[in-house]
Image (cartoon, rainbow, N blue to C red; front, side, top):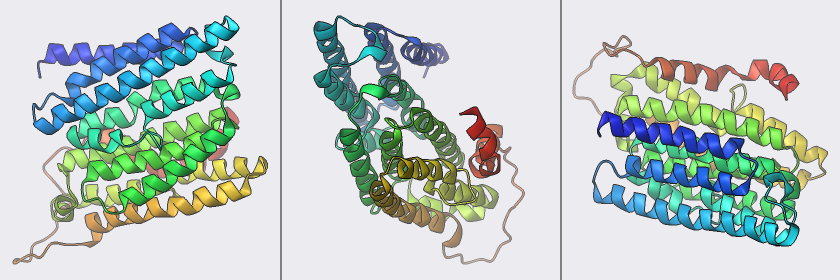
Amino acid sequence: MNPQAKLIFATSLLMGTTITISSNHWILAWTGLEINTLAILPLISKSHHPRAIEAATKYFLVQATASALVLFSSMTNAWHTGQWDITQLTHPTSCLILTSAIAMKLGLAPFHFWFPEVLQGSSLTTGLLLSTAMKFPPITLLYMTSQSLNPALLTTMAILSAALGGWMGLNQTQTRKILAFSSISHLGWMAIIITYSPKLALLNFYLYTLMTAAAFLTLNSMKVLKLSTLMTSWSKTPTLSAMLLLTLLSLAGLPPLTGFLPKWLIIEELTKQEMAPTATIISLLSLLSLFFYLRLTYCSTITLPPHTTNHMKRWHTNKPVNTSVAILTTLSIMLLPISPIILTIM
């Protein structure tokens, strides 16, 4: 792709996100979401492969529908209350329509079907953008309207997302699809807590972004798209494979890694809200996700392909290690000890 075109699309993405997260008026927020959608479409379809074109078409149709629903819910609210302010969304029908629209934009169950397909048709770097940056504007809209959303509906969607994200990821062999289902189950954890503690949902999103970015960039530097390729990566880049193991276990939420922090805080908050059964259900459903993360780590570090010759493992590689991979991996593994500082900021 032309560097100038790439720069225009990157700037548009940044501008669309900034407009949405800094706006108070629904029309401005909608404009930002539209700019974002139009800027990411060329990045999805840049390879000219039929699967990439299909992914871009699916993405466009879903996002256009969701944007129309956002507009419809804000207009319904303005019609009944005379308010265009994002934080003044008080009409119950508008709240329900908005929840559905944002769920569609994020890929929350039961509107999740497009997400794994679109991610499978994109490159790993575009997949990273779709899993992290593109979810930030809708999450901020949820954050701003959190006090008027329906907790029962969000809890149902959250449990459904955690269940489907875990179950559907079990049988996958493509790393992008596995990370897509991982994203769906993580969104479940964010949705369940957004009405009770919006800041905690945002913290979960930030840490999820850190860990997902580390996983995507590691897979990208190893050029891994399938589990079968991942099995041969240990002999080429053992250090990166070992780091990927820890990043994936952090995504699964195992202590003493970073990913344990948001889950621990969410379970604690749900217990305070007298929702211990819900906390138990979503914790048990996260075991499904743990299974496919363990499958990935098993493939990357424990399974070795059959070799006809014995050779030494190359711990020193000639390739320079990407600095961003190193920083993100460190953060996605070692942030748990500084959780008291994070809690004081919150």
